[in-house]
Amino acid sequence: MPPVAATSQVGTTYLEVNGQAFPVMACSLPDIGWETVASAGPEGRRRLGPAKLGPLTVRFTPPAMTPLAGWVEALAGNRMDLLDLAVLLTDGNGKVRERLQLVGCVLTGLRFPECSAADKDIFAVEAVFEPTALAVGASGATVKPAAPGRAKKWLAANFSVSMPDLPTTRIGRVGAISLSRTLVSEHAGRVGTVRRPGPVALSPLALTVVGPDCSVWRDAALKQMAGGAPVGPRVVHVELRDVSLKSVLASFRFEVLGLSGFSFDPPGAAGVAGATARFELESLQFSVE
Image (cartoon, rainbow, N blue to C red; front, side, top):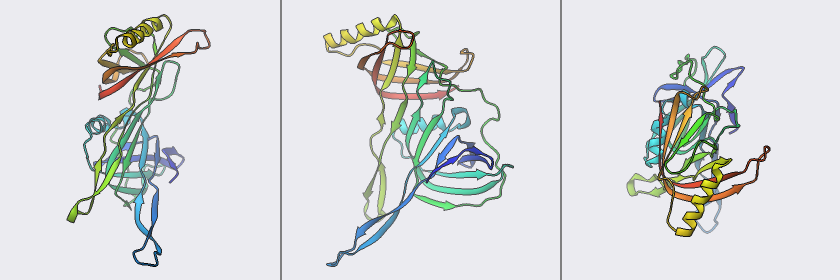
């Protein structure tokens, strides 16, 4: 289905989790499809098989979605938590004009945006869920948002990085971070078909450093290439800060296997050299202050 605008002339879109309504910036509802299968018998006629639902994708800011930290923990730990969700489309008065129930949802993906000192975009997270059933629910009730009415503004430009052994004050970009997994359907005897999670894939942590610190990072990469053993940090911390850069809004803790890639970037408009280092992730933790 096409994306649903989260804010428009008709109202706001909410994601209901455990009976609490959280506003979202954008929402793509699941597509519904039927596969064509061959019937048993010599004729081999085709017929439509069971209906299949596509994913539900929502985009939101972390302060507007308090379950986020728990979702990160569940997905990073590859837990198979089943969630009954609902998408609420409201009118200009905050009353539900349409309610879509999504039953037995499993979180299969989270994507945190790139942080860049040159970017002025809102820090918005994307979550992907796979439901087992879709139904229309009751409308007419007035939504009472669970998220705080006024929260500090989160911008992708406000961040800091810390790690041992390597300088971090001139890191100008932290690449987007994603966690994802696929669900595998298996036949379980009398129980029927069940879904089981596949392994969780973590995207590498990419850090772009500019200016004089590039030579220090380059030397670390060359040292690892000459020695054959991983060098550099084992733990990297990334903090998201408010517009004053004084208060920490949230933090990531990355456990890394070591430096897994290094590339020289062309000089920017100001002629300043840059380089991007990539670290293979072993685990991550996310917490909101």
